[in-house]
Image (cartoon, rainbow, N blue to C red; front, side):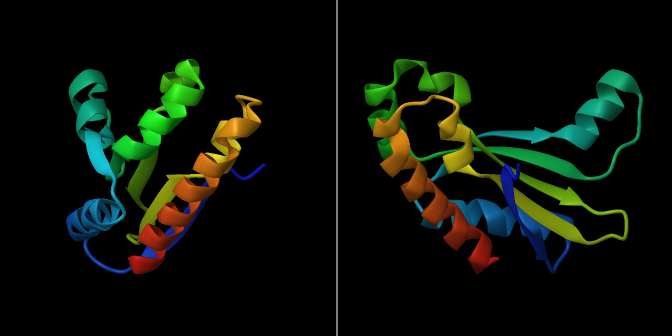
Length: 128
């Protein structure tokens, strides 16, 4: 089962992160958390790892609607968008597939929100 949507993106890693955050903003998402996995592994484990950032993206209006429908939905929020460096030095942006994610709730009332978030994430990825 595929649970993400990906794009290979040209550019320097930090520039791609900045462009991704900007594109998310253009689609109404704020980045609630920005986890630098490489730095965390270096600090906590004294291990080297590729450049890898996890951006916790949230659209407040859609989150409000979703939580009003399914109070436990907060366990699945925010939606993660990942930017990472490939072994060959390329950069990938990968977003969770919200429709797949929301399927675990088995709540059909969330289907329209999943479709909306999916369409917005697709536009984010296409803009990069």
